[in-house]
Amino acid sequence: MNTNMVHFRRLVKNRKEQKLYEVKPIGSAIRFKRKEMCMTLEEGCEGICSVSYLSKLENNQIEVGHQFIPSLVERFKLDEVYDMIEDFYDEDIKIIIDHLTYGTLPYEDMTHKYMDRRDYQSQLIRMGYFTLLKRYTEAEKSFRDLKSYIPHLRDNDFSLFLILSNIQLFHLNRFSEAFELLTFSPKYEDLSQNVILLMLKWRLLNAFRMHKISEVFNSYPTYVNMLVDLEHFDLLKEIRNEYVQFEAYFQNPKNLKETLSKMNSLNQSDRDFVIAKSMFFNQKYKEVILLARPYYKISSQWLVIYLMSLDYEKEHEKLTSLLGAPDELTDLCNTSKLLMTHLKHKYKGDKTQLLNYLRREILGIKHLTDEYHVLDYLMVDAQKLFSKHQHYKDAVQVTTHYLPILKYLKQSDKNDQSDE
Image 1 (cartoon, rainbow, N blue to C red):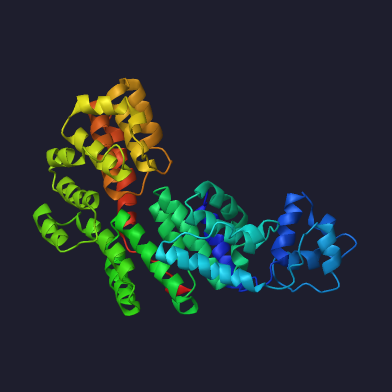
Image 2: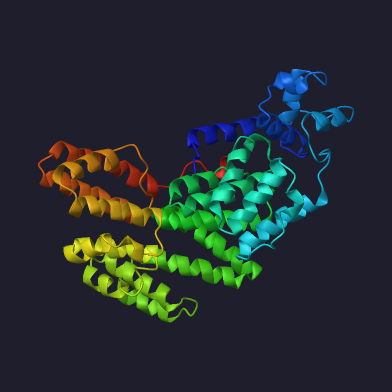
């Protein structure tokens, strides 16, 4: 998923400056269709209106004159007349937001009435529908179409687009980009209650993964208080479960076991994972290995700490066996794939292959992961590997490269929705 944050920021800036937000989908329908037909503005408006008029219409700077609608519908082969918002669109947007808030699934034919449409409304509905079903490849197609239309989306639609884009990036373990998208949100007082809940929830989930402590301290009490006031106790359990995993970075296993004994909403695997994370950060790697054995083949989060624990304990035979049988692993995320690639070069490649990998991937411009503890592990390990082969300048360069990234992941974000 290509977000190109520089371009994204520019579109958001244009949105703030123009304040011309789409209320009728005909402009976007024409724009999408014209590009699909490979027509220039001049070709699209010929015999109907001026180039300037069509450009302003596509960019929502004017409302379409009724005298132009029949000709535009015919020129661009539009199956429907888009001169008004239909009631079912706003209702469907609300339904998608409710499903996202409560973690429920949409009805199967939700996108049926949008089947023959290609405008910003139909694309946002499709993006929401496929994101709810975790069909991210299909959702990304709508993201690409909607991205250029950011300056013209209404506040609620724009906020939903940000949340859906964030979910896709979160799924790819790109937490810093996902978090930044949410900082572009309009002011909370302009948004619906459930949209605010979603914004706070996903800011927290990203912050947990990045160890962004200041964000957790700021947003967690606000979100919890809202859930209590609204009596959303299932959502409260969900975020509490995530929070206790975050606490595992700082708490010792004994204290966490006491905390977990008072929680009845976690299944055994999740309870064990909280303890395993705490053991990992207390450098009790042998205990982590024992605890992870029933889970690492079926869970990427377990696999990540299992791989690093095996490496720290120098369990070379187990690592080699595991790296040689990837088909046994049924749940691989980007971070676990990254770790396996690193360890394969470390233990199965020769010196030349290893050094080439370290320079190309570890010191390259490619974004690796936003999992704080994994990035920290890769930095320290790469530094040791360079030093082992007497490439000391490269070892220093690793630290110089990664320390600012680690600092950025943890620090408070200055670009906040309150600045809008």
